[in-house]
Length: 399
Figure 1: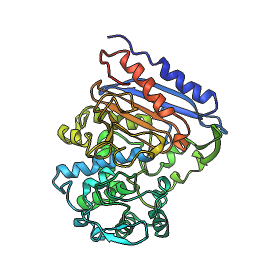
Figure 2: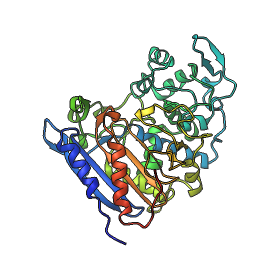
Figure 3: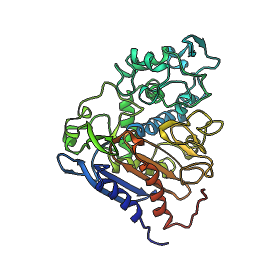
Figure 4: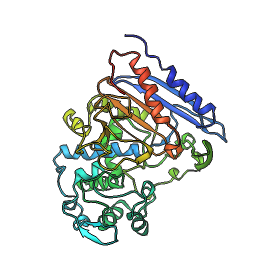
């Protein structure tokens, strides 16, 4: 087998930084056993000229969702719930779900919202930062605004339960705060706080000691600065690394997007996925459970379910499982991977994907918003595959 060639990937990253489009990047390619390639380039903070480092800390935002979903499915294995159980069985505020009509009226939903709906984003819940639907003003009136929501996890979940939904549960796909509700359910099922469950049952066993909802004081100097993209280049600062809100405890631990992590830590999570639920003797899930999570749970692809404009790309040929997107038709998908590839992204330009055929995975960490400002994630995928395939005799078919 030839030595993998990741020159195209490295060139892509250096070009983005040297052209002033990004401050810095950490990227890695991994197998189940070892990190095959890594690239660290640029700066944590341009103004302070702090060099980017392998142990720099990143806001991973929605790449928190797969971790939360794994937490839930660990409890599913313990028979704490069934996927098609009504959410109201565990959270009474969700008992009388109403659908908000275009005229402002509310009608009773025909089907009850289930745990599967929450994990698949088909519950009818919304997320103000990513939506322009009629639910948004109702959410904002109730102090519900994703990670900026007011109150504790129980209160936020209860308020979400009392509000109407945007469609009949199970009939459409819409990015939402549903994974925050999953975090609350983890508390109900386990008897632990959500934050404690993640720490004790996932982060500590995997050795993810630098991942959490708050940056510890001894790690303050390693948090990257987040930038807005303005006119095709780095613009104003969104959140400064050395004076960030993440240096203080959050109002609530957001299972949708609250974690901060490093490349080394998140690669441990990815390697667990590549190893079918186990890492270095610590098994989180049975292989069959992970297989179920990373297959399509929609009756069609995400485009069929109304995700056509989400995140500025097409979702033809891409399905959604229990916390992950998954390629179901490589001929239709814009993602250059085989059926079965799965992963997800974060709002600040981050992405990971796992190829169970090649038994390899890729991770990209950077900090810019909005993430659709550049085609970076698509370019990263293609460059990563170029390198991965250079040392593997697998060829995927893609138009």
